[in-house]
Length: 374
Ligand code: MG
Image 1 (spheres, rainbow, N blue to C red):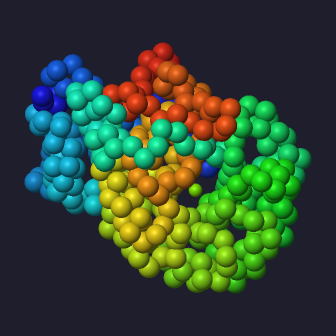
Image 2: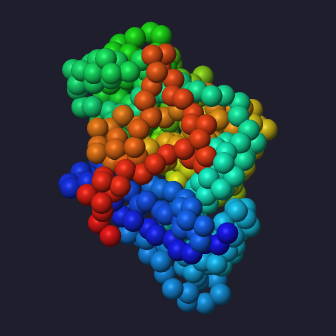
């Protein structure tokens, strides 16, 4: 089998708001082969930049576009192809958006391998620890206590979520308000639900962060996510050592090298690679192994469409240290309908992990064509 073409399709809803919601647009990666099997991937980054990285013509040996590097190769050599992409695009893909683009292709290559061999990706990366996973409801933090109450009521009516995460939005504007909002979240979700808070990197002052976090201890948070920009490794470590709440981070990181630093020095308890940014399934599995060795959980970041959710579920199936799925509950057209049969929760709040070949999804071509921008 040979790779014949790679498409990077930019998809975007009609109007995009400047809020922390990555499900308003995406780039769908399709890897085509000479056997008619097509792998599906997705990237959570700047879509047009990702498209340029995939489609760029070769400049010189270490500056080749990703499609140029891969066409003609056997797609089943997934690990080799990851290293080939990394090496021949090293000047511009060592970190950040280059790794994001590689992630989408890597997901698609695993999808091809699963489809060709007739097994789900999870069985190719070690086999399955579980068939279902509890989902937590992931939403942006509303501005008012009333909106928090209404939002929780709405989502509880829809699904039996066992946990809620409120992130970004109204958080990070003042110490007093950050405490009040989280108190309102706990009241709305009740004493038994897991509660997670994502500051979205908005805190800048360490002492202020410590004061707020001490208040949060009373609200029994399951984790506190990205209080600071993730490069502030020392502040993460200090905060982690000064409170009892678990710290979570990782959605901006790429390659196993960045995660190694975080896991070994960063004071992070819950590691959150985004599989459409960290380097794909190939890298996420290595990060999961490293996290496991250090006694840390791995709960991937996934705030996009059903493609990323499918890749995330396959990883979660194959590792011992995941205990929840981030379920993007934004009501955007792409988050809900880019794949056919979008993942639903059962009555116990769990999502079934597909046991079909590859990622186990089918693209909704009507949605893709309706919102296609390039
Ligand atoms: Mg986050």
